[in-house]
Image 1 (cartoon, rainbow, N blue to C red):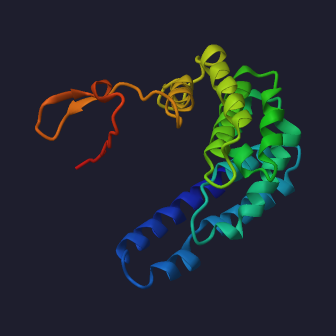
Image 2: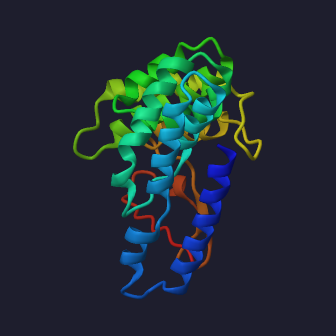
Length: 231
């Protein structure tokens, strides 16, 4: 396993250097198609997992597969391998605390994402539960915001319920930078509660066109256009 990982990192570094060298050229798409190393190493990792079923090597190889980023242009060549790896990890390691850092990857790589999230939310491990709860809330919120299929109030209500649970019960779980997973949950709660059509707009402080301080609440009852820009 470690040998494959080292070889992949070396191949990926060479690929990145080649891509930077030819960036903007007509050859870029051909370089991605022919030289991007993920598909070949994904195949090798799955073979390694199959040859070592029931071992630590299998677990690490499957985990590597689900945590590997999809690369535009080649993802179709190993997407099914990620789905298979996710299914096996979900089936054999759903209750393991060692799967916590891959919970989101497994859910999003699963053909039935909501079912996968539900399984992890019932895990006996606190961190697995918390991360799965946040992912489930995010998926529900995303479905609610979908301009074509969303807008169903039950999706919003369930997402709010799960975000509240993350804030109340799982604020001790952190990302790699030590930020609590409750931080994005609080932001989504504010969005779902206070930034909906028909809601009273939150207070905004700024400068008007004449450079004078203004408050949005001063214009209540009037039609207001707010132009956000960044330079």
